[in-house]
Amino acid sequence: MERKYLTIIVGLILSIVLFIVIIILGGFKIAGHQLIPPEYISDFIVIFPGTIFTDILLIYGLPIVFFLVYYAISPHLIWVYIKVHKFFYRMLRRPSKYGVFKLGTNVKAGRLFYRALIVSLFAFSIAFLVVEMVSPGLFRANMVPESFEEVYALNFAEAVFLGTFAICPIIIVIFFPIWQLEDSGVVSYRVFHDERMPADIQGVHSIYNNTLLGYAGFSTIISWIILISDIFIKVPNLGAAILTPIIIIILPFLVTGILAIPIYLYEHFFDRNKERLMAKLEKFDFPEITIPHFEEMKK
Image (cartoon, rainbow, N blue to C red; front, side):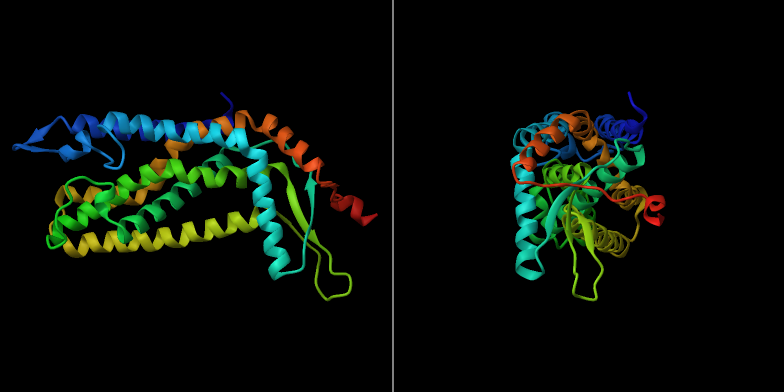
């Protein structure tokens, strides 16, 4: 196994350990009370059918299925992303020209982990939004009424926890073509010969990546503040419940584990998929763009 996969493998192991711990604790009782709510074992994510065991299969299996679907349609899907980019610049700004910048081939482990983390942060923030606007009962079974503030605050946080695992397999579909655009070197460029503006060269992925990254970072911080402050305000004697805010904080790092296999598949099939994309782009006369090295520019 290549070293670049080290960080996502660690995430995969941690996520598996998390589920094992939940299952083990679900079988223990202290003073007649289960350490893990029984609905975690009997239902886990309510929106998924079956028990925690079938839910785990779906959590790890759905991202693989979505990658295979993406792989089948990726050249056409990525072309849609490029067309949307063209439409945006044509409507709001000066139209861009497009080309392909030749990139290197190395990928570091930190980069793959960073990608997985952004997806999990985005999924976490979307889960919080869905729980807040729709219903916590969409993900968590046996929600107490909102009038029971102390327990409801914990249940709400648990619903976000479960919702993140449910939404993450779907969210990754949005990011596959963005990564493909970035890794394939597809860029847009505009030159302003008669204006006091520098040339504008950027990856086509940038407008998508920066938007999603900005939303994921900002909304995650806001979600953390709301969830954690709500727990500390409404639950006066936390006790063992102190684990809930801790898990909420580290949750995005744990969720990266369920993205390990689809990211591995993305990397494994990248060269083949890039050839398919380049073959499609050749039909639209995307030139290869070369930016000279600094030493060459000095001559």
